[in-house]
Length: 357
Image (cartoon, rainbow, N blue to C red; front, top):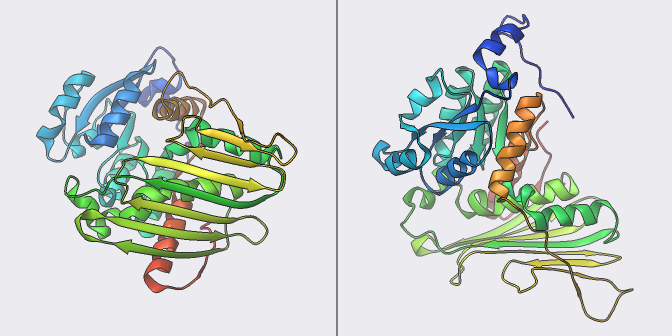
């Protein structure tokens, strides 16, 4: 794996100073100290996930407005602080940014400049320029920037990648992915402002845009359509094309009256893998050489949630000086693909796409 190097701004090795500032990296008995910005669904999920890990201490919680974080802070045994205080605090090693999307860059950049590692909820930012600013700030500070594309830690999606990589399904031809949820309504008002959230494409579909990049690599063309109705009802459909790989169709929906669902169908010349989160047997494989009916696969089970697995893996990589599975550059590439989907949907044009370097 690639190793991260850390140096002081003037290029002199700062290992001795770092040992004093970040003892977690050098002594397993010293916990990684975490501050969480945001006390909504994502912030609470990450705070609770971090609490369940050895050698990790959640020391501060911030919310907008501040008093909305009081209950979560009490649950975590953490102090309530402002975002600015957490970014500047001497007793915090890593900042979790789980604020509304349009605020990610502001807080991630402030944390990096204060010498903190950053774990940012997806999408990395609302705009490409903001994401590039975050990457530059973390690279310049020599700190880790990780982005929470948690689907890479879900067992069904990991199993799919395994079967694609080992050739079980043969040469992939068609992939269809779907992810849907209730209309966001007015419960999260900022979600309804596309300038702040990016709408259903950046909030929901982005999970699957990142997934197909992980499974198949970088695409070459994007075509999309979307519908936006009243009361937060929104739907998007994207076709992702590769020069020498499958046709990919992705649906993202804030119009599911039965609630949250995910699924995918992967068709190759040797078999087909189907995942449906609502099915009794959510993972099945079909092969032309096998029995007439589909063979149900044992869905991998986890002793801990994918959100906790994500943080466990990240913290271990930081301790070893390794890059995270989804670093800032990867998060930027997935955001860029999401922005291409929005551009195509708004213009009605096919977008020729090249991943950022």
